[in-house]
Amino acid sequence: MKKYLAEGVGTMFLVLLACGSAVLAGPHIGVLGIGLCFGLVLLCLCYCIGNISGCHVNPAVSFAMLLSGKLSGRDFCGYVVSQLLGATLGAALLFWFTGMAPEFNFGGVTGANNLATNVLQPGATSGMALLAEILLTFFFVMVILGATDEKLGFGKFAGLAIGIALGLVNIVGIPVDNCSVNPARSFGPAVFSPEAWGDFWIMVVGPLVGAAIAVVCWKAVSCAKCEK
Image 1 (cartoon, rainbow, N blue to C red):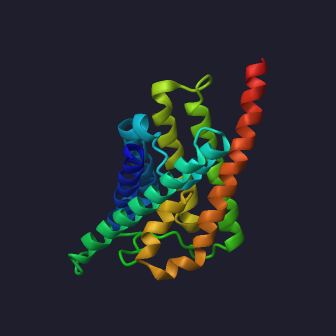
Image 2: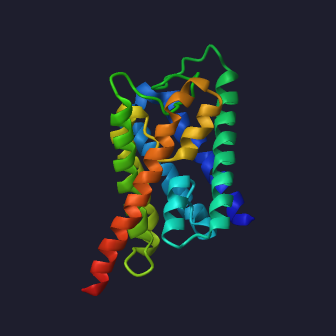
């Protein structure tokens, strides 16, 4: 139960702090600042709960670990439920916080009313967003698999690589659909912003497909490395 609790708390803070940066200070810190915040929050969480649950805080990452044989089916279900609940709690706290000061000049990229939900940005198409989610999650999960590999990984420095990777994909993906690469991160804010459900399927299909591709690619790359 401890690892499930850790996943729930970790995902809660990811949504509360990272999405909160977009809602509260978007124009002041820009896409670069928001991406940096996502990366730094995950980096901190890696070193906080990494030794407890592995710090997935993302159903796509848990899916990759399931496919890699590093996570049982039972734990996968427990992780995903905990992540969704944690994300919802984080979004609820952010929704409550923003509702306490309706006259406050919120500076969010997408406004305070939808809590930085993952929706298509002006000019973006569903196909463009889906491809972006697949490719960005592919990269993100590849970094995770490589950095945490027992034989080829980088030990204590893994969290640093993972945090930087999340920051990078957000910088690229925010202009398209506010960047998900994490179905839980999309789910929590959408609970309080019904208009986001229309694009939600992209934030589930894209990350899961990207994670699956990353697993296949990493197995091929790591096996080739081991053979040498």
